Image (cartoon, rainbow, N blue to C red; front, side, top):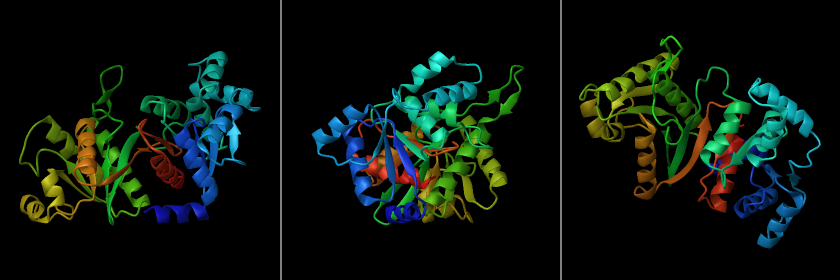
Length: 332
């Protein structure tokens, strides 16, 4: 997988900004990328502090761009653009204060085209990475929400799971009069379509299973209705996709069980892209695959934004930063 992504980056040079330029894991990844030469890192932070941290760790970052929000020559321009993007929800003084923080500053570098992509979260929470992205980079045309997926690999096997990190649950969105403006099922369907698109980027030919505790009507309840309705919407949104549901996990992955419970389905028993009905089952599911199934998990990969912005686990190591850097930049 990564060999293919590296080839993409060699053919399409990209810059990635790290919001936590002083972090040793970030610096180790940046030094490695500098040596490899197929992706250009930008480090956010105080120049002297970043260089001192690199020297302490023995990381060669000579020649890499380090941008300090305190001394950035385009800060006034950045403040004005942030105020405009927030449309009266923030004063210039508050914008400037926010932009002195690496998460907001790095996101604006992407918005202004200084960088193509962003990777954060080594010390910031997921919310602190996603919030600036939603406020400044915003969702792409046609997207109603941000979601996430994980790419999981085991040997030559690759699967995709979503959403395991962002959307806690799916509820109808209402206007002030109580009318449904975006149904829960439409939101889940959008996650499925976006996850299938991400899977394709990584070389997976998506066969999408809409997961439930029911297979083709064997169970009943609001959660089943949600998945069933979302499946119908996915088929309308992306008729070219192989997608079926609702189905249980065993029906999704076992040809014998799948074709018994869901005869004739192109997906049942052969799924490689799994859509969970809410975050709890998704987060548990990918971690079971990782810890008991022996899969390596890469993500969360954020979907629906105008530019690739991804979140690291605060418990990540330098290898994970390096690999997520490749994934993030390749999505640009």
